[in-house]
Image (cartoon, chains in turn brown, orange):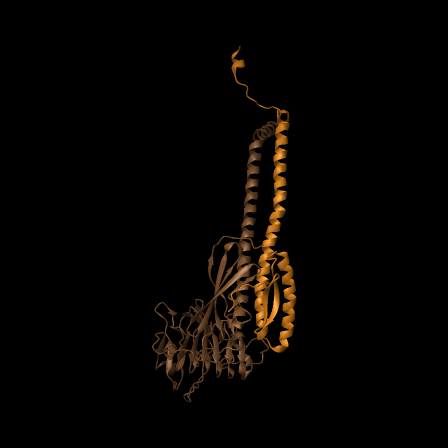
Length: 371
Length: 136
């Protein structure tokens, strides 16, 4: 035992320098790595602050330009130089703003000059002008009062008629039998159903205007899973009839969809018009639908689904009706449009303002201190 | 000379703490350890401060963008709720200004709430306020 201890002590004496050098090296490397990490974090945060300040300065420049408040094309704010260039495309006006921060780095943003903001009803999860069937909701909640003047109005005057009609667009199939499958007496108007591409994704061609008009009823037939709609920018689907949603819809891409069911102005129809049906009408209330879009019904919104969830805004000009006791509506409001989002065909209100700024390109990635 | 004398001398310490040069080696070790502790003690507070500044900067920028959204949404509220919302926004602005100064984001720009034709807006005010440009 004694000799083992002695041998151990001897070994320690002979190797302690090697051990010390090893521990010292590890400690030095650790310190260097930690220091480098924090230096890199500081540099990265400076970059983030620069980008944030550039966005704020560009936003102010765009706001002032839209409102003509003593705005020049070039301005200097807190050492950041902001330059503005206008572009026109038809009736639409765009501006590009470049913000240069000291030491040569610059950020570019683009936005459209909008005639006003979206109606407030499109910014709320639920707005109903008529009666609300409270049994649709599990929880009691206070529904804010909606004025008729806040109801979104559609204006197609700025659009080319050829651009906006859904006829001829392969995503909308004229179907003479679909109404008879779901309604005892069928419908009087033309019926269209949404038809996805072979890969299961729907790609409606909204064209330059971002609007499509369906002259008739629109059906989203039941099917397996969610029907995906690919949209690169905000789009509005105006249906001059009823909208029957029997399947979940999800938007993929950077666009958002607004479906407007307008009461037809060319006659009286047995099935009515301007109504949105969440769940197909003859449903036994077992269907579950989730709609990733904003829905505007100039007439009623009828919920026959056991569980209908709408992620965008629900705006109802008439009543909100439940067909079954089990019917439930969840107005999640998680995908409400921004008040400064270009929403084609929806009449804007208030004074001119820029749309949400979109970063275009960043030049010279070198990080420079702001101060 | 015997064959034993010709053998090179190999150091084999029998009593470790009586090894020649031990005190020199121990002193060297203590000095190296001291240098490491000193370096760590110098670097660590600076590193912690840098991390704190980074966190504060990020928090300030996040607060700025969330407050900008809140101020913009004030217009969409009913007149009855607008006053209360603006009061809350001003409270948040005061906290943001404190955070802004602590984060040392910019000595020339400060956040403020301005009332414009479109309603209240969160803006960055140039403390030195000078505008250069071509005019429209």
